[in-house]
Length: 107
Image (cartoon, rainbow, N blue to C red; front, side, top):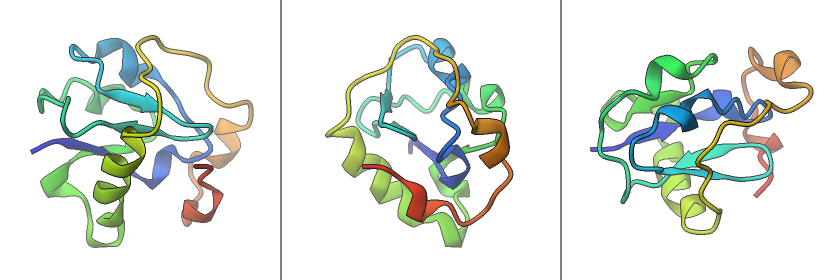
């Protein structure tokens, strides 16, 4: 099993999770992070670090977010690794509690 970054991360991109990852499995896109399922060791240290609760174990991803499992795998092959935290996106606090953000994802 692996961990999955879900919709809550879109347009926020808080990177607190990146600093604690022991295997550097996070990948960075313009307004979203993904987890490379081939690199993730299922340690779960990233979960409590996410201020928007966007990271879930694959088996706990709700039905309406299941497509993020495939999306993480797909985008992690295209995006570069991120190994240090950065400032969140400038309007992250405005977007953090909004649902239905998939259309906002920049690939």
